[in-house]
Length: 455
Image (cartoon, rainbow, N blue to C red; front, side, top):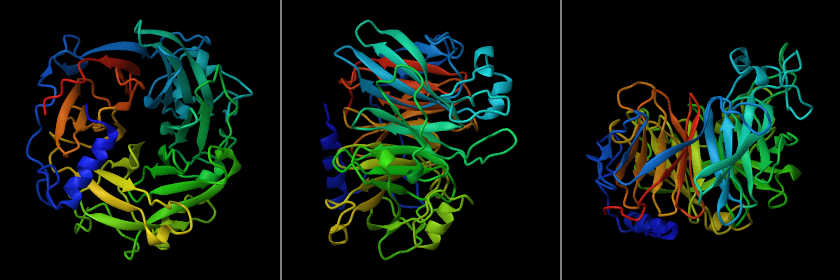
């Protein structure tokens, strides 16, 4: 079994050895020709939901309309998700629901009438806004869902987020709505929900982490620095240096990434390709003023000051001393990129400029049948990337795409519904892959012979 450490070393060896795997290629050229065999061909699902390789199976553990322990029913638009160990046999899943206020017009009666002092925001009638998170407790041994309930309400478009080393879920609002006749507060924040939550938590926006179209978050366990993506065509890549590690509510510094000696660098490769695949670029970071950004111009001010541009930064996940994040419509053909960032040994400290962090365009797609608009992603326990696709063109079906340490793509699952896959995450023991089907919302547990990868 390949470890996350081996993933890092394997890919680094390719980079430093000057070798180019067929997957990488050159900007504006075909990046890769075909998928590898991996776990074998995908077998047709008799239920016409999710095709998987031989030996793998899925179970729907939660879906739209199921009654939950708190009397509410499972909401729709299941998006980002994180997994935490609860004990030797049970795990906690924290699941986002990317819902906007108008969802209340069609939602179940229980949500339509939900009024709570623990709602972050509400309509003029006092009804809690429907965005937020739910918690699921799942037993890996019995393969049974034990309970599920709401943990955060009153927010808007909780898209993705990220887990923390101190066992909490960072739920990110992909919305910058402001107070109006039917809203009482500004939105565009991150909310922290402990995995130990037993019901609704007090919704405290982490305002120092910025107000923008938040997508996802990843925490470096060594430094406690939080890295943030933004779902905009002209997005920035952010980091938040907390005043106190693990205490995000106590504030900190919000910064944006700059490519060293190349201010206002454009990683998107939409026109003239500026960023070659596989080449490392040294980085630095600039402070961002007024992170509340009442005019929603944080990214524009950051770019003016020299920050690099990214094409719809979305899913992000921490690996082994590095992270990966998707840029959904980046690349010459706008089919998606995956970026890779390795922090400085002095990340966020004095001395960082002498040993800067570095950025790499890890993958750029030129073929929608092999990689198409990657969104949420995870670094798997066996050292690969697993990427959820998010496209509604029906050129090809949405897939879960694997990427090996050598940069080779493979198909792991094919979704038959015209909706996206989201929230892929593994149980800590590596036995089970959990993933959401966005709408109608379903949360799925996948098991199988993970160790039988065909190299």
